[in-house]
Image (cartoon, rainbow, N blue to C red; front, side, top):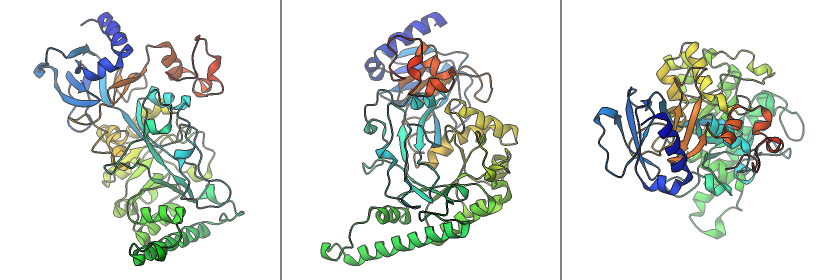
Length: 439
């Protein structure tokens, strides 16, 4: 199948997505990096109804007569990228009324029409942990979303667990961001920890009252959304995603985790290399930022690219994140590349932007690798994923094409400056009828 035919076919296929979803589609000839398992130099990826139906060596492939075959020879296919910490969608969490606001839900403020979601698609990102900010000790509940196209409401992006509940964690922070010293906010690191500790103790007491009520509504304490959420944390039903940079702040988080037993992911950890043994001993995963820019934050002064390499040697589960816009979503793969440059293995670096983050978000059974029966979230690259010269050509979510660099509108999102991903500026582009970045 020549390149011309491939181009014509993809236009036809993605013009009729329902057809593409109902028929088996095989992408054949690309180098496939499944993440779990060895790379396949010339492989095939077979998808059907949003799921991976098969994967293997192209020479061993046998397809049914109704399978659409797309020649992707010379390209690279790998799983869709998973960003464990982002701010796409323009959502905001807690306000200035207090430093600990677990009842706040980013769900209630996310803009599904934001062009920033398509900017993430252009970087090959298919799943995101959208976080509220870090100006609070607890700024509220995070949200795990799939970057599906044509969303009209937040429900269209949600990921549900086996019990039918939409998935997300909770954002905590320490260090200078939340140290305002007024309006109930702490002025010191010690007071920051004290406030968090006191709130968790109240949650324990609230849980005990509920337990003692034994289902008797007359004995139940008044419903408290904040404490109710923290009980979920204490019971391991909601993961704490904790912003922390300095080595002493990292140790404070680990101390609180040991005291209250909550599930924890350490985020940023600029000075992880200083306390790597303690992180490894605590057996908690980390979500690293490699490019902390624009920074200007004193806490990040000692950020080292070698963080990933140091932690890898100790067996820590390592993911990466953009903290978008701190690192632009479109260059997320570059974080893995810089980690390799500083000594991390290539395999674990690619694992860090896919499967490790899937595990961090409790989604390892659904996404993060190219395996049979997993979601057909994948990207087609022009070359090696860690090369600065490589472009994301196409991004697929559940088998549907959500980004295609060959299309003018998508190309603008991929290569444009700040205005290309800004809803207030994107209308100045040169494409008639362009609707602000939405397909």
